Image: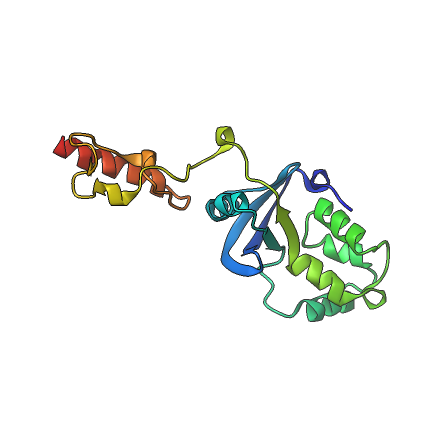
Length: 203
């Protein structure tokens, strides 16, 4: 077993694949922040809006982490070529050439690697750990640490041309009080401002 504290403080570019109950839902790529409680970063935020409601339904969410999304060749071939180029290096030293040392320690622990050479290890198992590291999501962070909220008044209950409620005359609704949540990158702020302008012009 391993604990997330073993990768705490690491930042790394990665590709994330969200799988819910065995079905691939979405991919994101960007800088991942590895923390003592799990993973964070913009690409994680963009996946989290798909996860919370699914966990509430009792569904299983796994994020598979590809730690080398920049690799443009087969991983085993890459490791063999690195071994040939760096013929005095063991697997741990080769991995430290392109991955953070904390991640290397964790990967080596999972694969029972100490000071072995490339020819002495199971490259398929190592590739699976580095290209498809499974991170089971048990929960998302609390409201206090959230970047964006999900849920709110359904859009079907407002007039999008004026932002007036179809249920209560004279009530105008904007921003995150509505069931709108966008990706990171200013979209939520943009929606809040634009919906506020529309409501302000029609009050």
